[in-house]
Picture 1 (cartoon, helix red, strand yellow):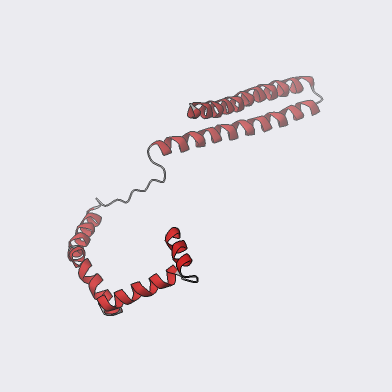
Picture 2 (cartoon, rainbow, N blue to C red; picture 1 turned 120 degrees about the vertical axis):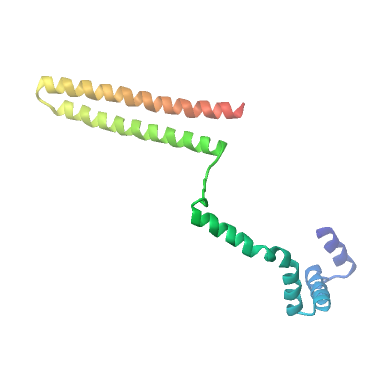
Length: 155
């Protein structure tokens, strides 16, 4: 279309293909169909075979709806997309839980360092360092799975 318009502009400067085509198509349709009413009549005649079966389809749908067999099912993610989304959601949940565990362990370690009683301090430090170790392992595992997934998709 660009080549045609460029050629026509070279032959006759100021020629506008879009407006000329619009005029030609408008004249052809008006002559052929007899205006807007004729166009509407022609489209209705063309759609009649499909519209003729519309009451039967509506009755079949109503029957299924009354009997409880018509159940709308929508899935945003299906097939392999669903597996990918669920995998990322699971990783996000594990990462969130691990981050919450790390923060909680940090608070417990701070509480242990503020304690003046040796037994309480040692118990809180043990609990805090154990939680920090566990949450760090979870975070590193999530990162490793994400990196492994990236490497696997490249290959």
